Image (cartoon, rainbow, N blue to C red):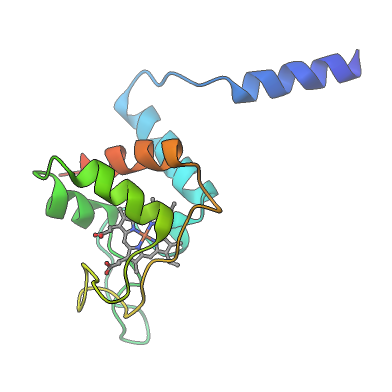
Length: 126
Ligand code: HEC
């Protein structure tokens, strides 16, 4: 019986959740970003310089939305960059964030989940 209820609990967790409104969807996306380690480097809103005077580690989600929102190819391209990491020799945020490239995230997130996250980021405009 106990095993059965565990299995049912696992089934419940694995079932995709339909989010009724924007706030719920935002919360679910942020949870996904946290669980995938994105928020170790990224922030939702633009962040000030750090205490040591250095710029933020990575671009804020909202700045990414502003930069790419009118680019119809952005979803595919950014999903690929998230999975494989950014090219250290062709960075897109030079001078705006710290001097590091984004490492590949394929160990932390499945491609389909990364795409959902990227599509959410791309509409995060004020
Ligand atoms: C170790 C730090 C780090 C982690 C973890 C990280 N990123 Fe990044 N990310 C960066 C940096 C730095 C850049 C800017 C790269 C550049 O200048 O081209 C970036 C850029 C991006 C961009 C814009 C890419 C571009 O070419 O403009 C997206 C989208 C993105 N990250 C999404 C994610 C997602 C989604 C996750 C989690 C699955 C994630 N990142 C995890 C550091 C990180």
